[in-house]
Length: 123
Image (tube, rainbow, N blue to C red; front, top):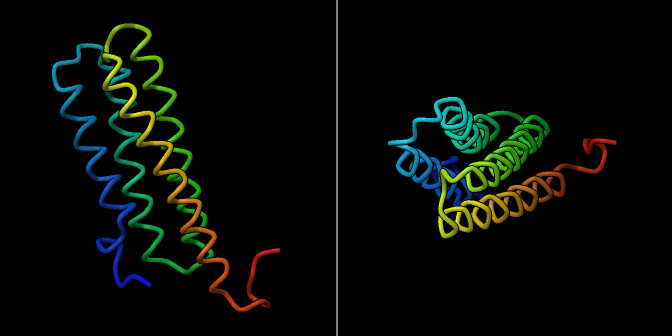
């Protein structure tokens, strides 16, 4: 078990991804897409942090939101690559990392449900 969200590898990787997104898009002049990608990236780590400071049930919900943000960022990555804002290597990294984060978030969420007593598990 973890003591704080700062201990979670998934949170550390989500933060690193957000920093990478900001770095890669620093000179991007497509402000709308840049803003959306940055917000989605930050949302992954932020929802992990917020969720882990709440009840197990709430945490599972926030982890689901974080997974949604990872999917949002992945979609935006495909679009950014198709319009020439991202090179193939960067696109591949963002896609692989968002997929891995989604897997990690799903596994963490499942582990929270297993830790709840049977009468407290969601239906």
